[in-house]
Image (cartoon, rainbow, N blue to C red; front, top):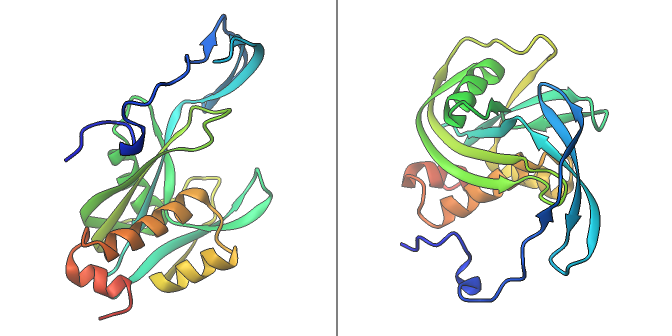
Length: 208
């Protein structure tokens, strides 16, 4: 197994100098994020005025897969885009918490589920030109009920849908949450390439 943190095609290629921060000013700070401003030097040597949103949580998500190939999704209102969003259970884990503990909590709180089996799916940089936010997701199965306990600001709907229907809706553009989209495609890749238990993969792909 390759241990390099680089794509295989990039190994050995020369890289330009890294961006350099020549100072830091905190413009805004909240319990969830901070906005920092930097006089900076670009890889080309050009001077720049750069701002970065620095998150205080790791974004976490889980695709809960039932034995029949259905997945549990949650629907809720989202403030930033002023829209209603269907997503897999997600949340934020403080930087000093194990993200896996955080997402297990979110699975119970949002979807009323606990899982016997977990497999890491993705670690992604959410918007790496202007934020330092990291997202981590899992595939979970062996599901059973757990007490549901949504956040006081949330009214959550829960739906159990065939996995292939989720892929269809992503294709239609009705499911747009980035972690959900990326994790669903990764789950399809894992099912096709033998990275999931055979029975679970067959159920996901509609081949029971």
